[in-house]
Image (cartoon, rainbow, N blue to C red; front, side, top):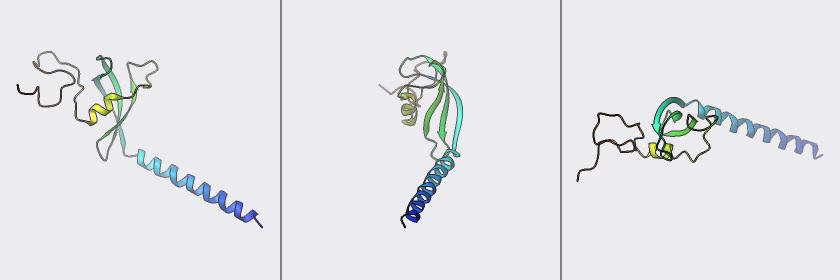
Length: 112
């Protein structure tokens, strides 16, 4: 008598797992990957990164690969993603542009 109940619970669990995994795959379709050079906020050195960005909100999600780390897989707290989402530039310093520092927000230095 309880066999049908067990089968019903198993089928329901399988259907739920299928719905969750399908939603996760559909959400990833809107992510795009770009390769950028930025200054690591922890080390201060320029690095090449694969940056994953949400195509809908234009918010940076994570760094998928980083040239600074062995094997390329980031194991850090990804402070660079947090700073980029706050609008803080992490572009490498370009000689010939006086007054700009790599972590300076757009618009230049604050007026004295």
